[in-house]
Length: 115
Image (cartoon, rainbow, N blue to C red; front, side, top):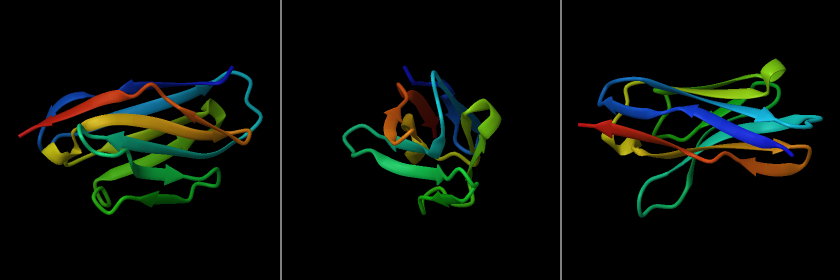
């Protein structure tokens, strides 16, 4: 059974940095895209950043220049480095991965940015 396990997150002051990681485990043949989404209270879940198996990336306009997504294919792990954090970045962050034609989600990790 494939699982995505996230780590990182927490509480940080505005302007600070945090890093998230998400490791896929289980029987895995191939991982296509890996991504981070977030959901703030009362809002819909939104795509933050996505990376293909070849390393191409795309970001939400709101995080461009501040967040960096990367992945380690040997470790089946995706990372999100978040710099210059703003209070509006506060949300539950979810890892997503397309593994062997199936879509998987992590359990979510809270990121809170205080002003």
